[in-house]
Each structure stands twice: as structure tokens, then as C-alpha cells.
Image (tube, rainbow, N blue to C red):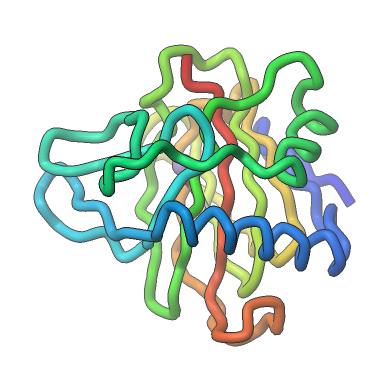
Amino acid sequence: MLINHQGFEIHKAYLDEAAQAGLVEDIRKVSEQAPLFSPETRWGKKMSVRMTSAGRYGWFSDRSGYRYIERHPSGSHWPPIPESVLAIWRTLCSPQRDPDCCLVNFYGETAKMGLHQDKDEKEFSWPVLSISLGDPGRFRMGGQERGGKTHAVVLESGDVVVMGGEARLAYHGIDRIYFGRSTLLPKGGRINLTLRVVD
Ligand code: SIN
Ligand code: MN
């Protein structure tokens, strides 16, 4: 089922269980090579979400601000984006241009992500594609101005969201995780993958 909310294209139940399990396995390999870490915000506060990346660039944050970097904090290059993830981008976004970054976000029981815009990329003509795995999360969507009206939808394991057009620079965030509702991840929690064209 496809829901369109102000440019947010929400493909409910896009991935079946076998596809979800395959993605988890591929992301587990990514996190073995590039372990999850908790970035600091520009105000020096640790984020509740743990992150890593795959691709040419990884998203990073510390007191110097939000940016893309070419290496994991350990100094290694980021692993390549798994083919299973690229296949979803090629089908829903473009077979012509692959993304430069797959940001992997891991949400434990109490993790959340405040409303923000994805605007650290050099250009905004490509959509951001988001894949949800594991426990459901309440996804909040706003407009392009801070403080505007917002609307929430629960993203479940296998849901895929394409944020393009008017949603490309729209505010969004995760209010809460419904911990332990999904059996996909044995220890619970939610994985979100976002694919971005950076430059
Ligand atoms: C993000 O905005 O980077 C993540 C969104 C989500 O977890 O669904
Ligand atoms: Mn975002």
C-alpha cells in the first residue's frame, strides 16, 4: 500500500520477511567492519541513536557540526553499500545514479531523533530513501519550516519511505520506538537505513 503525505511516499509492507532478514544480515556485516558509534551533536550532547554508514561517504557529527566524511572514526574506509540495499534504491528512485551514502541508524528502547531536515548534502534534486527494520517507530513529518504543523505515521519493519520533491527538505524525526513488538532483531530495537546522494 502506498500513502502519499505532502511528498513523503510511504510504501507500507514493501519488503517481505525474507527480504528484511537478508537486509539485517547484510547490515550486520557492515557494522562488523564499521562499528556503530554514538555521535555528539554540535552542542556536545551524545545522540541516543547509534550510527554507522556504508558507501563513499558516512554521515558524522561532533562539536564542529554535521557533515559527510570519507572514513569511519577508526580511520577505515566505509564498507560498500550492500547490493540488497542498492536494489531498492534502483527500483524506487533511479537505476541511473546510485546513492553515495547509506546511513545506518540503530534505535534502542529509549532512542529517538528530533525533528530535523536532511540538508548536509551538496544538492537536493535526488530523494532520500528510508528503510525500516525491526521494532516500529513513530515517524513525525512536518513541512519545510520549523514549527509548522506535523503529522505522524508508525513505520513498521519492511516499510520504505521516499522523501523527494516537496518532502526532500521537510522536517522529520522519530518520536519513539515501540520496543519489542517485532521479532526480526533478536534483542529488539529498530534499524533505519537512509540512502543519500551527497555530491
Ligand atoms: C533519519 O532521519 O536519518 C532517520 C529517520 C528514521 O529513523 O526513520
Ligand atoms: Mn533525516
